[in-house]
Length: 279
Image (cartoon, rainbow, N blue to C red; front, side):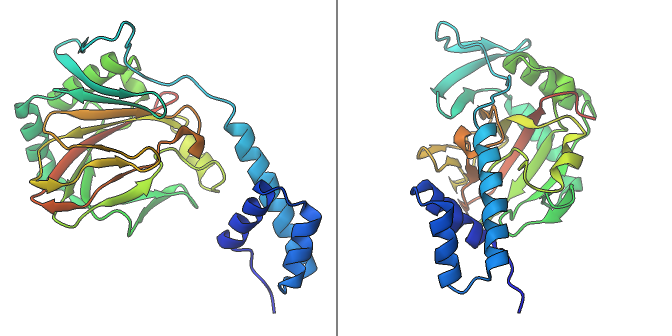
């Protein structure tokens, strides 16, 4: 009977390597557990090679967007609007921004998005396409970059604020969460080890930063969580959270999620920024 190399087996092999066990001792343990020798050797070679590649990537940061916080400003000039700096975190690089959007802009985005909402999809990293994901239970839609005066205005404001060209941004996404809806913790970068990632990267390289803007304020729940550092950002209308990741690796500590909405509903707009021009 053939044996398959599962994600659980790969994780176990990595854990053994981290604990200092030699490949030879890990191979013997696998054989003693009933793994065929050829399958065990292949699993070891593939897993350890991938692990070494991931470690190497973790040491090669790239330039990322980000507001200029030299001198510890309490407000930032976003061109047509002053934006408050509410809180900052160094590792991961997280900045909570106050008043990025006006109430009228929040309501305008919701009304423009409402007729186009559909069950949210996530990127299918096996193929580079899209798929339904049980971890994401919101509804959503995308605006084309520069689709309307409102969208263009917000995109220009973000670009100035984080010092990154408008052309390097994906289209603005609006998401709607009803009570109980959530987005479980995940990373926004594309996993380099997935077969569909090269196709995705052709459109503008890796994602390097995210801006989540809160378009309304749910009665309870719905915050943006960063489990690796125990941080939760409250969803306050008009505010936003910006975070960047200079490599596609968990070392960035940018694992994040949308906590379940307990009462009320939550509307957010998300802007992902790429390394290069997004087409």
